[in-house]
Image (cartoon, rainbow, N blue to C red):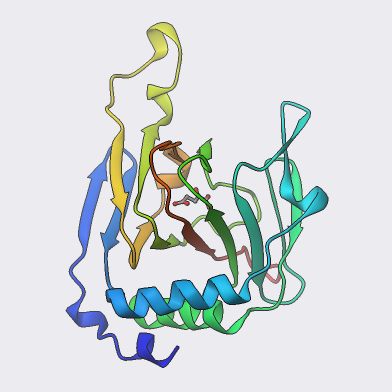
Length: 219
Ligand SMILES: O=C(O)CCC(=O)C(=O)O
């Protein structure tokens, strides 16, 4: 995946979105031809979790995850979300290439990535925050999108409250394009929930990779 290395980080135009507790940066730094071959290489290489690792627990009930998932990372890392603990498998070449690209783009060496494949517009991700205790809260989460463009929705935590506690803060919607990178900077994941809603009419597949930095165990 040498062509990712040819991208000049100084030529990337970032769109910065800020609101109460929200701080995200969005750009499309990966040219279409590179994004196309990367998508195909991921399709040819990745094998998604099956069995218990492809289930989530919500209020004690177990459901199949409404998309496909797999996780990669440095040796020994595990990650717990929605009641399931997944091991980080060794980095495959195209995922490692993206991790190296983020070092060039942002200067951060991520040690874990959760990969979500949305086979079509029915596959989705519910509202949640990425604020698990094993994540380093001082580091942004980097979300790389390839394939079908989908809408990413951010909602302030107080806009989700019922009755008089509800704050009238409008959601923020971002169309995540093929070849895009979204950085969710702190404290976004403490204050805002995010989701990828169903879009029944969309047929195309999408692969999203959220690169994360774990809390150092040596601290
Ligand atoms: O697919 C996406 O863009 C969202 C992924 C996500 O929310 C997550 O990995 O926590």
